[in-house]
Amino acid sequence: PDAHSGVLVQGGYRDSPSVKAGFRRYDAILEFDGVKIKDDRQLRAMLAKTPVGKPIPVMVWREGQLLQLTITPQLRPLAQSGSPARGI
Image 1 (cartoon, one colour):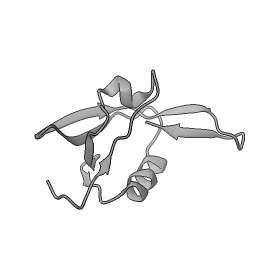
Image 2 (spheres, rainbow, N blue to C red):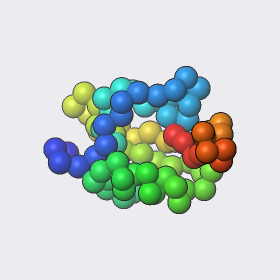
Image 3 (spheres, one colour):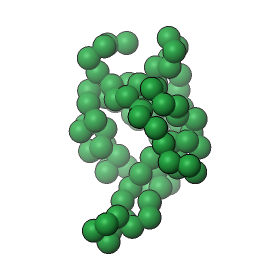
Image 4 (cartoon, rainbow, N blue to C red):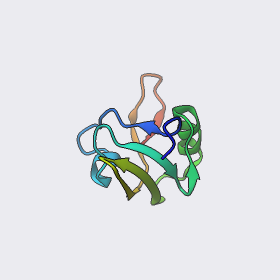
């Protein structure tokens, strides 16, 4: 994988879609729904356009191996602004 692309997973909230999908701390997200990920801004923009409840294939790099996980975005509890936030 390209050392200058992807997004590093920092952690996850208990019972979050990312934890349920099998993401681990320090996984590098390389592709989201078949699109190569360059940075976290791109990933957030793609997530914002993804329908809640739609399973998405995600390619990650973990400990020297390429893995495909499937994540299903869900609405998170209300944000401080009072509006629901999408989350993985």
